[in-house]
Length: 337
Ligand SMILES: [Fe+2]
Image (cartoon, rainbow, N blue to C red):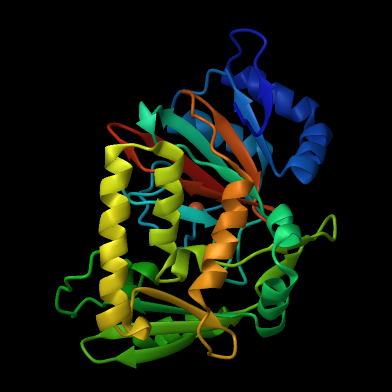
């Protein structure tokens, strides 16, 4: 099993025991995180969202609850949310949380509240290795041009769309129906807001494709190409099919290939829920997306969740995603500033 770095309980340890361990080994845990990018706490009696919030607060005192990402999430406690309400067959491609915004969180914490019985892993990947292993020509182009993100939102007065994937409406994202307030919040985070017919809103922003790690100075692949590009989901499901080799993966891999072909032929990418270009507005070739996803899958750690697992991730070095699943699964998340 290709586990992240793991701290295992030596006995029937309670939440209080785990908090004691965290307080006693804070420097060691920080060093582990810097080296390995993630730490898994396994075998401790963490049962509920409230238990998890206590553990998360012990690990980091700067938890936040202002989510500006693209996954639908439900709140469970003040700082604990469901990781994603997307249907189980959707792939969630590897990403560093909110790397398309200047306010990306420094750390993420996940908790296995209901253990999935089939699939549903949350693989992690060291994006420092991805940066290192990319073809230097591809890497240089991303480094030089940066990336431009485009997101399209419906509003409270929009007609219902037929698209398979839609972001939550802009008045839910910004928690207001006041357009002036939306524009003020956008200006704060460098988002260009364009109001479109039918009460729709387009957000665009330009970001670097790489990050220098604030503690170690290492370079990190740090962008949302693998989530925002229209070809990415089909490429991802191709990898999932090679990994799983089952009929369900074959079915969705085929459906995604067809959906992507349809998009390629009939849809303006600028009208998609999410779209990504180079920072100069030129298109990113599919071959580059495929190359990046190939390198990610070479370095992926798709470990199986166990009930009560708590996973801490350095979001500035390590990505996460989700493999498809069937049946019950409840993975919760908390994040820091
Ligand atoms: Fe995420």
